[in-house]
Amino acid sequence: MESIVNKGEKFVVAEAVVYSTQAVVSKTIVKKDTGNVTLFAFDQGEGLSEHTAPFDALVNVLDGKVEITLGGQPHLLEAGEAIIMPAGIPHAVKAVERFKMMLVMIKS
Image (tube, rainbow, N blue to C red; front, side):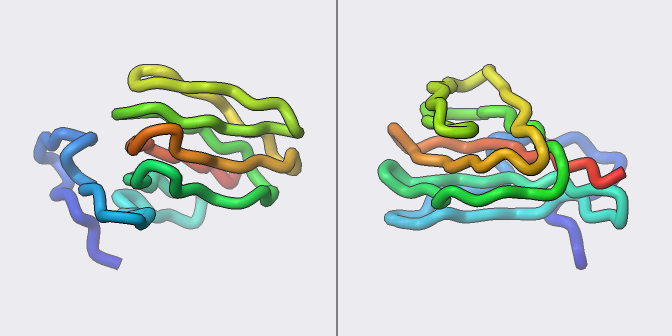
């Protein structure tokens, strides 16, 4: 898989993924057997339904506002804030307003 950024060159994280009307856009910038780094842009009202993942995942909000529900408890996050979603705990994502995030998942 070809990365959307060039290794060894600086880039603006929040500009590396763009919003699309009534959609969720994702761009993987690092993909390894041991983990991934993926950028997401959610239009307002878009989200991901409740699910679980087998690994911890760090969500770093780059722009906008999101409600992340972990184990039934809602958390409102804004640009500059982050949360770790623990492995095996049901979680969901809902864009309060359009927002961008960087998701870092470490598999080992």
